[in-house]
Amino acid sequence: MENLERLIQLLGRSQFVSVLTGAGVSAESGIPTFRGKDGLWNRYDPTELATLEAFEENPLMVWKWYLWRMRLIAKANPNHAHTALAEMESLFPEFLLITQNVDGLHRRAGSKRFVELHGNIFEGKCRYCGKRYSEEEFSRLFPLSDREFLKRLTDEEFKERVLEGLKEEDLPKCRWCGSFIGPGVVWFGESLPEDALQRAFQVAEKSEIFFSVGTSAVVQPAASLPIVAKRNGAVLVEINPEETPISSYCDFVFRDSASKTLPSIVSMLREHR
Ligand code: BJW
Ligand code: ZN
Image 1 (cartoon, rainbow, N blue to C red):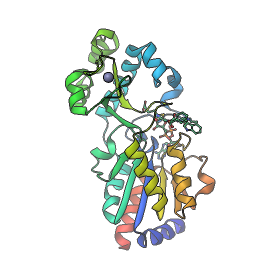
Image 2: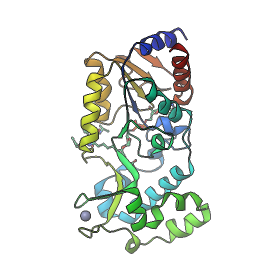
Image 3: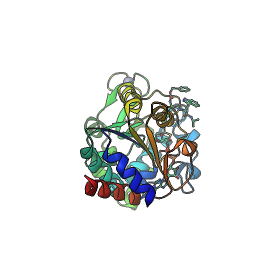
Image 4: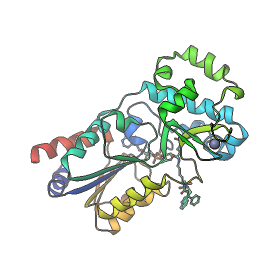
């Protein structure tokens, strides 16, 4: 608690605050993390599913896996960590939320000042020519990916329409080049969106306080952001029940869930101001 009060005092004097989030922030919305005990990738081999090679070899299997995750996300709701972060942006003159999450829950919770480093699962991206499709455009091209449609599907219907019913010829094709369109996320070996990445590094360099929340901090280049912030003089704060490779660089460590810690910080900060 003493620790928390000291952090609140520092935050109260700060103008420039940034937050990097990862899958742990959405864990309590029921969306499995990637590498934790219940991590998605403990049950499914990522090298088989979330890579360009896999998509080229078996686009149907990769799409079924993504549609399964998209349905899970469509049915989920933002939790207290997302809403606390949405509130936090109005408390500082300069604030940026940098998320690695592809689920769009920060936007749904009301965040406006954010960048999505690894894309968005409801958008589309042609892996051949690079053409991007907005969520709206993509759901017209591939109605199965529509958020509202997926949300309403029962388990039985999902099994019938997607797991058993979807065929390779039903997969969405690029209007420009005719190749299969994949989900609008960043796979290993792919570059991150240039504008989001540039903004994230610029902001990390200028931050007075930098939070790393719910991320295992192993995937590059996102994992370098807290280190860059620290090297440029930021106070580094980690919120994660588990230790990570950046823990030893942190000035404050909260070994607790994001949905408990962030609302406490925001409510204490409001009282402090
Ligand atoms: C809680 C909690 C609660 C639980 N509250 N917390 C330099 C060195 C070495 C390698 C590389 C390098 N530069 C690039 C690479 C290669 C690669 C990489 O980083 N590999 C490493 C694994 C070593 N990076 C890339 O390929 C990137 N591209 C790139 O850099 O291009 C140029 C280039 C290419 C090749 C070589 C060199 C340069 C692209 C990375 C794309 C990542 N994509 C994914 C999949 C997105 C699509 C999808 O969703 O399917 O993004 S991977 C996956 O990991 C996903 C996540 O955004 C990302 C990060 O995971 P995150 O969010 O940290 O989740 P977890 O599960 O790991 O951790 C959850 C944490 O929450 C845990 O710590 C829990 O304890 C905690 N937690 N409950 C708070 N309630
Ligand atoms: Zn294309």
